[in-house]
Length: 226
Image (cartoon, rainbow, N blue to C red; front, side):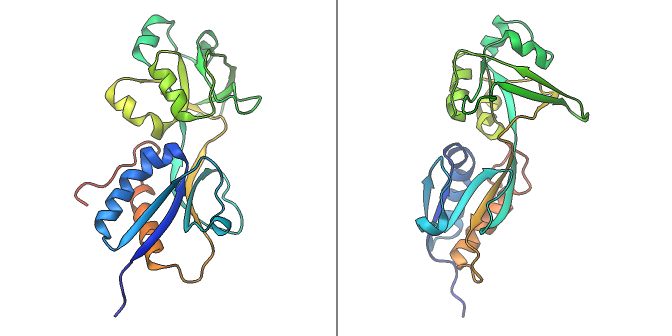
């Protein structure tokens, strides 16, 4: 007789991803596995699962770290968005070059974060625009709120903008173009290379893989009826 998953699972994730993507699926997991408890550690830094005693780590990256088992959860892409009020009060944006005349909310973490690269969907040609704006922040939810406050065009992960876009409080800008700047990649779930993973951890990994791996960026939702 094999016991089912039970006990505490400690999992860390970046703030925006934890709040806007992971949280809903963990609630679903807790309903499905009543003998498993979860501690969600929200941290916008690279948590070391071995040194910090964390079972699972979610990291958004293009290259998972060596020494840990990495399983891909979902792609993470960035999009441009702005409020309808801002867009109605300013010149139309039909090409990336038009952004030079607009207030753009960028990261400001590195010197070239205001160099936005774009590619036309289905084409290899790229164009790069140097943007400026009144508000710069290295946190995606801050940039989102700046866009909601009519401060300009923000670049944010698609999953961060999903709810505002669905509500109509933000509008996608340049939907025919792909933003090809930094901070793209995938969300990975990482864990130490244990030969036998605890059933509680395997259950959570499998649950998140099933919920997210087939979802496109910004469209991950709990499955209906589960």
